[in-house]
Length: 98
Image 1 (cartoon, rainbow, N blue to C red):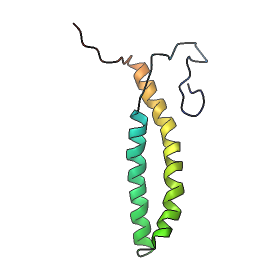
Image 2 (cartoon, rainbow, N blue to C red):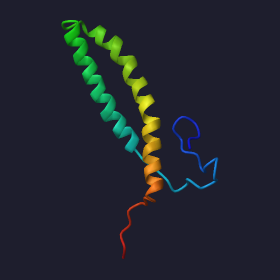
Image 3 (cartoon, rainbow, N blue to C red):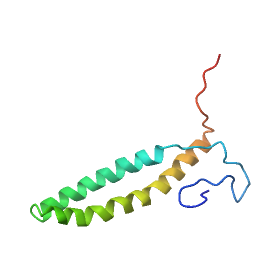
């Protein structure tokens, strides 16, 4: 389904159906933002409570690698799920009928 890290392939390798009309937009990014943002706040609070308000460099040491890695790990599966749902339900761009 993917051609690279996040790019949707132009057609299915198994059956040859075209994926040209499918576009999930920024939906996966929004969901990843909510999920990773929530997890980052939970980790921040757990570290603050567990180590009795450590210095800011401790939080930076944990959060700076965690946030990009978790975001990259989340976006691809979320984009795949949104694309599969769009394809299954034959979702089309909204149109105004004249």
